Image: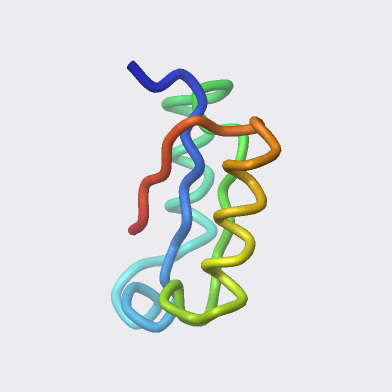
Length: 68
């Protein structure tokens, strides 16, 4: 089971509908240490975002990914 989950938020999809700062704060408050990385990208499908996710996984900081 995953112990350190990276949360990657797609701003293009969610920003028109949700307050992303509030969403991030709720995630931190609820899951704290289980989510050491929470990043917002303009588009999670971009090459930049995919590279960051891979880097985070390869570094061992996280062992699972959730794309929101």
